[in-house]
Amino acid sequence: MALRDWNSRLYIVGQDLRFGLRQMRRSPAITITLLTTLALGIGLSDSLFNSLAPRQERKSQGAEAGKSLNSLNTAEAHALTLVFIFSRIISS
Image 1 (cartoon, helix red, strand yellow):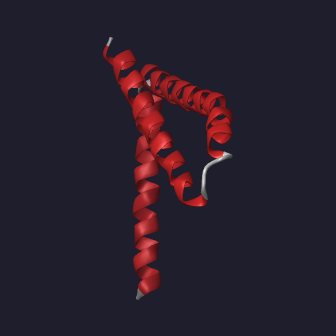
Image 2: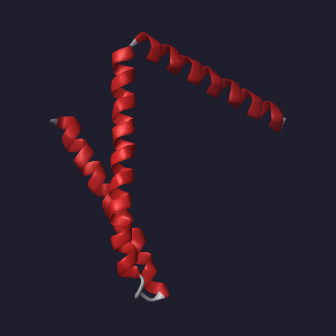
Image 3: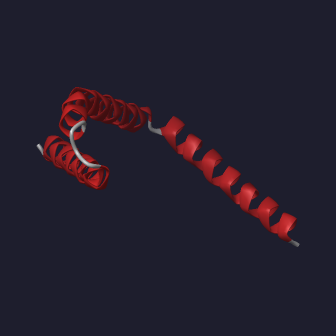
């Protein structure tokens, strides 16, 4: 019974993927815009993280083990900053 359930779910996912690909073929301008935005977003977040990570490592080298959780808060702050930047770029 569980195998049938998984097979039906995989079939539905396959249908959704085929539908998405058909829609992308029908409107290539939107597809190019979407892929460009996605690539720029990934590249910007990666470069921002790579430029800020060494600074964060230097700060946390002297920190105690319990205080190393602050890096999670910093990463979340950077992610929110990226979301704000992207929303400003898209809205302008």
